Structure formats: C-alpha cells, structure tokens
Length: 137
Length: 137
Length: 137
Length: 137
Image (cartoon, rainbow over all chains, first blue to last red; front, side, top):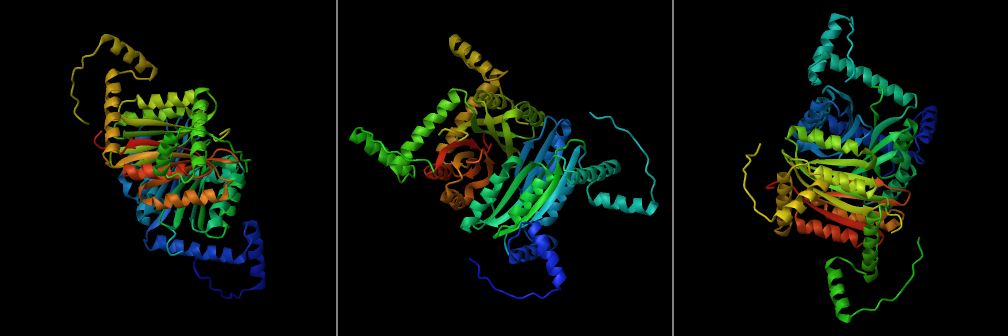
C-alpha cells in the first residue's frame, strides 16, 4: 500500500463551505478523497496533453439499418486496431445500437478514432471518455 | 429511411471559414453532417436535463489490490442494477483495472451511480459519457 | 448463507482413487466442491432440457471483410433481441473477429440463435456455452 | 477472397438423407457450408490439441455475496493476465453474476484458467468454449 503523507491547505472559509456542500451532493464522505480526485483528474488531463499512454472509452450511437454504415464503422475500427482492446455492443432497440470501444495507447490516436467515427454519416452520437491506465496517478 | 429536408443558414463569412477548417481537422467531409451532429448533441443534452430515458457509459479506473474496494464497487453496481446493462472489465496491468459500465434509464440515476463510484476510496478516476438511446435524435 | 447438509456416498475404492487423481488435475482442493459442481452441472443440463430460463454465451469467429456478412449477423442478432443482453467484439487481426454474445431466456431460442449464426456463410466457428441464471443451482 | 475449389464426396444415400434433414433443423441452406463447418470444427479441435494459439470464452456463474469469492476470482484472472483480453460482467439478479472472459493464447493456459475458476468455492458453473483465432481455418 502506498505511504500516505499529510499536508495543510489554507483557503477562504466561504470557499471551503461551498466545497463541502458540493462534496455531499457528490457522495463524498471524506474531504481528502475529494481533493485526491481533483489532483488525479488534473494528472489525467496532463497525460492526454503530453501524449503519454492513456486509456479511455468511445461511446457511439447509430442506426444499424444503414447498410454501409456497419461495414464502415468496422473498417475504421480495424484501421485503429492497435489501440482498441475490445468493443461492447448493445442492441438498444430494433434500430439503435450502443457501441462502447475500450482503447489504450496514444491519446492523439484515440482522439482521431473518436473523430473518425463521429464524422461518419448515420452515426448519431459519439463521445470520448478521457481516462488513464492508472499509472502515476 | 427518414426524409431529408434542406434549409439555409446565413452566417458571417469568417465564422464559416473557421468552422470549415475546424471540420477538416475533425474528419468531416460534409458540412451538413457536422451541423446535424451539433443539433443532435444539443438534443442529447436536453434529454439529460429533462430526465428523459438516456444511455451512457461510466468508465472507472481502480487498483483491485485494495480488497474491500472490489466488493464495494460490486455492491454499488448491484444497488443500481436497474440501469446497468452490462460491464466490461479489462486488466490493464497487475494492479490497475479499467471497468466500463453501460447504462440505460434515468439520467439522475446514472449521474448518481457515477458519483457514488467516483467517491469510493482507491477509485482513481471515473468519468460519465452522456449519450442517448438514439430515439428522437 | 445457505445451510449446509452432509451426506455419505459409498463407492468402489478404485473409482474414488481415480476421481481424486482427476480432481487434483482439475485444481480442486476439496472433494465436496467437486461433487457439488457435478450436481450443479446436471441441474443446468436439466434447465436447458426442460426449457427453463437459462443464461449462456455464443462465441463466433468470422472474417469481417465479407461485406454482407456483418450486416447479416447484425440482423440475426436484432431478430433475437429479446434474449441478447450484450455482445463483446474483439478484433483478433486485420481479418478475424471474435464476437461473444451474452444471452438469457428460453434455451430453444438460444440454440436457434446459435444455429442461425453458425449456418451463415463466412462464419468460421460458432459455439454455444450452456450455462444458468444461477437460480436453483 | 479465397479461391474456392470443388470436390466430390461419395456416401450412402441414407446417410446423406439423414444429414440433409439434420441440416435443415440446423438452419443451413447449403450442404457445402455445413461440410465446411465440420472441417473447420475438426481443425479447431486440432489447434487445441496441438497447443497452437487459440481463442475462446470462459463463462462463469457465481454469487457475488460471498465476499472473498470476488477477490479470489479477480486474483486468479490477474495471474492469467497474459491470455485474458477482456471480461464482460452481467448482474443477473441481486445475487447471481454472469462473467464472460475472452481469452487468446495457449490452450493449456486457457484450460487451466477455466479449471481454476471452476474449482473455486461458490462458483456455481463454469464452461469453456474452445474456439479459434480464425487463422488457418
């Protein structure tokens, strides 16, 4: 288990009050855990900016009845095979599909894959969750 | 296939120029598809705000060696069983796990689940991708 | 936790000897756990035969370059939407895909879905793992 | 696309009749596709026997309320990290979990992982789907 260190933070009383109220709404039972999460959030952002190895998720919504679409999405994914770990597919209804692509590797590649999928006609929605491999955070 | 309608948009020449350059970087080959995506993005945001049925993805990074953590995450997920479709788990390395939870249902519940997972100690990172069931967009 | 009962079993010494050797190879550290697994295995078989609600997995290998194939597989899956929970897709190499379909519901439907996928041209391999919802076993 | 060759097969009329009836029940519309599947099935079996690189699926049913169980299953999976691609987890009900592990690599390792998971107490059911990476079949 990593060694814990303790340090003090000074800030305006009002600011702390607002923060504490916010934490409650966010299910935190502990101020330190919330601060740790802010710091880790910041480090994850840095990993994406600096081109370090990242992990993330691309979520895509589309209508599978557009015939060429399914092949197009499959081709794009195979072109980015190196950073895709696996894809989860959920049949939302007779028309709509939810596809969740787990990626790991270069952040630019991940962004490019997300952009490429989003730009395809009949893809209704695409989002990129920028996360981390968990190293150094 | 849905019927396509056409309408005109007037805007500053400079703004359109910037937009077109931006679209190229974003892999779009077609201005209409980009506009459609902006509109759909806006409608998805509305679905989340209005509490309509949504779909989405929660991405969580954690160290599975913290023993109680794994049970805690599992318990939280079973408490929110109604909105979870399935979960994808990837062993990133000997310590770090990437867990991707596909959700569908009430947006408040999805946000609450995401917050609850994020607030757990030893969860390093959690993000919520707000997407749609594909209906009405 | 369920109440444990104990009962005796009598059998030929040689048979027990062979069984114990077999268990070691199968990683069991405990004869009772092995017997419990045999009994549960038998009950799962019964659930499939009697048309009770089951859970299972269909594993499919195919070459995604056969264009119509991908659409065909997607259509079949949407026709059986009621029993499919979610599908995991892994890009094995530039050609080959591994698709894992989690199913729950009527065993005949599951078998029919498995057969339908297997019979499609360019599907190289399809297997059906017959498992259980965990109830009554 | 691979070149197709044609060859003749001679067999008893009755046998062919039974086979054709069987194929209909199995959703085949084409005798050649059925024969191809039998041949590929045989080659997949060979890949497992000869220790070639394989792909497969392990399906596990368990009750997540047995606290140590979840950690135990996670530890075993991390020990076999090299052959696990990703794991899909489905909350069947308040007690029962369906976990589907996609594997790729050495068939002995895959069998050993499957046996290790099955032998764990409170794991109710575990099956191994022996499939292929799609190469050479």
